[in-house]
Amino acid sequence: MTVTNGNGTRVSIRAPNPPVEDSVFKMFRMDGKTVIITGGAGGIGYEIARGLAEAGANIAIWYNSSKSAEKLAASITKDFNVKTKTYQVAVEDYAAVEKAVAEVVQDFGRLDVMIANAGIPTKAGGLDDKIEDWNRVRAIDFDGAYYCARAAGLVFRKQGHGNCIFTASMSGHAANVPQEQSCYNACKAGVIHLTKSLAVEWAKWGGRVNCVSPGYIDTAISGDCPFEMKEEWFSLTPMKRDADPRELKGAYLYLASDASTYCTGTDIVVDGGYVCR
Image (cartoon, rainbow, N blue to C red; front, side):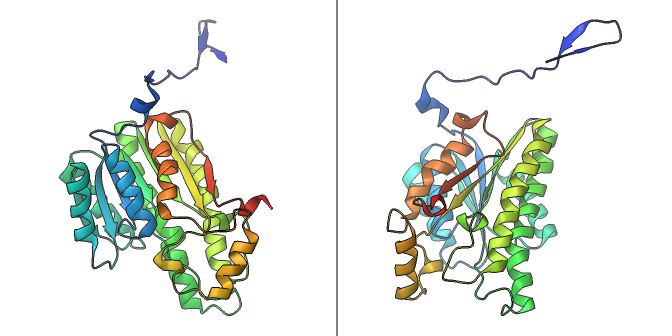
């Protein structure tokens, strides 16, 4: 596409291509990059942290109340010889998020990727949910995701590059059953559309925004669900099982790395086929 300037000369508005490695393995390397992972001491977040650290990234683990965050961070440092640091952050508090982003930049000297992964489930349907519970889920799962993207995005825009990845959910695509969870579903649908909206806005200065939508994952969050409920989940999932959280690492590494430099506004669904039915 071209435009015409005041002198009548046709000028291309084509953006320059980024440098691209010939080696696909080098594309996935993240040596020296700094990544924030919210909810990084939980099942999915911790496995994301390990996957990116194995690729060479330095990791800032954000957690809310984990008693094992320091131990988990130390294991990443030991296993992959990268810098890892923990931060206790309430993602529903924008001032706290902005402060923690600044601390990460100061501690690591840079910020390349924000993975807004923290989230909590709904325990009741839309009519039975307590208003205070609805507000808390929304504050963490939707507002908190936006706050993390905003605080990191201000850093990214100033430096002219940066990458945000949200953890959405297949529940943003389908009202999964038998559990009733209108608030969670609505928040995750909002995160998916927030991804697309920010992707369009950030592209003009070099930022990228994508998300991953996991299905049923074998983590502590689903650990207290009744046997009968899980059996119904499996019956509705074409692959007839839930996922080990390690099965998500590849999707996040792809989006975080230079293997996905032409990818923005994308939602990668990793759900064993649930939403295909």
